[in-house]
Length: 117
Image (cartoon, rainbow, N blue to C red; front, side, top):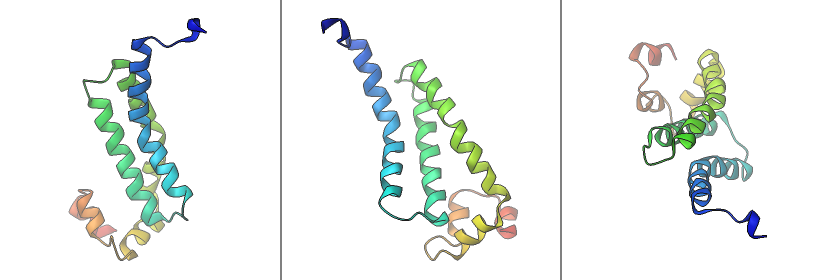
């Protein structure tokens, strides 16, 4: 069994991967416990993107981990870009009592985009 034992370097990779993947586990657990709505999914996607970006730019992580994190961002970003063409998304966010237009301002949308929403 010693042949299958992880080296210290491999344990370091596993630890870094665990930390990077935690946001995805947290999102999965959050959405598994309740019925998601657009008003909860979009802010969660924002948090996932922000967290992955932070990891991607973290020079303390191995280059391979940073590269993998950058590649991992492509999938949610593909779906996130689809919200730009969705009237339902904007309507759901504006009508949600917690978000309204403040969500778009916090997300640093241009004023013209906010007015269009």
